[in-house]
Length: 378
Image 1: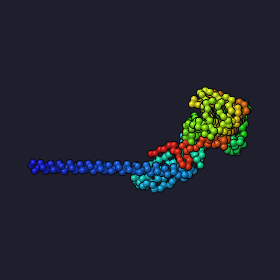
Image 2: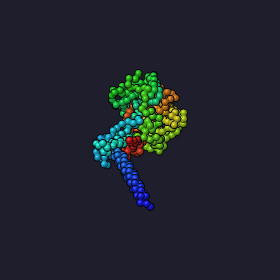
Image 3: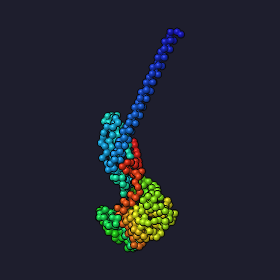
Image 4: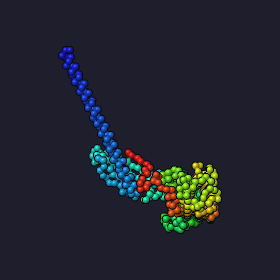
C-alpha cells in the first residue's frame, strides 16, 4: 500500500476513534445524569413518605397528637410535617402532609409532597360521633308529625333527663316538614334549649337541607362508614354473629327481648314489620337492599340507642337516642306519629349504640394500628 494511502487510512481510523470516544463519553454523561436524576427523585420521594410515616407512628402512640414536625434534616434533605383534623368526603379524618426538599435554599432546590388521610377516632380508640346524627330525627324525605308525638332535639341522659345547652335539631330533613295535630317539636339553638312546642321554635327544625357528599344510603354509612369502624357489611355481620346478644332476622316474630347489640331486621322487598315491639338498647336496623323495608306502629318500648330504617311509620312508644330514615320516597311520607309517643335526642344513648360493635381497628385506629383511607403524592 502506498505511503499516502496508509496516512489517509490512519487518519480515518484516528478520526473514527475520536468520534466513538466522544459518543461513549456523551452517553456516559447522559447515563450519569439519568442515574443522578433517578436517585434524586427517589431520594425526595423517600423523604416525603418517611415524614408521613413518622407522623403515623406518632399518632399510633398518641391519638391526640397534631403538633407536626418543624423543618428538619432527613435522609440527606429536609422535611416538615403537619397534621390536623379535617372532614373529607363527609368523613371525619386526620390529614397528614409532609413537605420534602432537596438542595434546600439553592438554585437546585426540589420539592415533593406526600399526604394521607386516616381515620380519626377519639382518644383511647373509641369511635367518633357520626355526622349523620343531625338531631332527634334525621330524614331523607318529607316528614309529617301528627297526634301527640313529642320530638325533642334537646340533649337527654339515657334515663330521659334534659342535659342543658347540648342538644341539636328536633327534625333535620332533606325535604319538607308538616307539623300537625297536637304534635310538638323542640331542640337546641346556639346553646339555648327550647322545649317541644307547636309550632316549633325557629331553628329547632331544618328543612330542605343538603347532606355534604350525598345522603347516606346504608346503615353502615349512617354510622360513619369505614373511617369510623363501619365498613360496608359490618353491622349485618355483627348481627349474624350474635355478638353481644345481637340478632339478625328476616322475620321480626323471631326476635328475642330485650333487644341489645345490633338488631338487624332485613325484610323482603316491600314488606313491613307492623305492631313492632322495639324494647331494648343498641342499634336497631330495618333495611333491605331495595331500601323499602317498613317498620309501622312502633307500639312497645322503650328503645334506647340508634334506630335506622328505610321507612318509619307511627312511633307510639318512647325512643331515646336518634332516629334516621333512609328512603327518599317512603310509603307513608314518614308520618312519624299519629298517637302518643316521643323521640328524645340523647348523645349518651347514641354513643352507647355507636360502640356496640367491637372496635377491631380495621375500620378505625387503636393503640396498635392506624387506618389510612386515602394517600396522595405529587
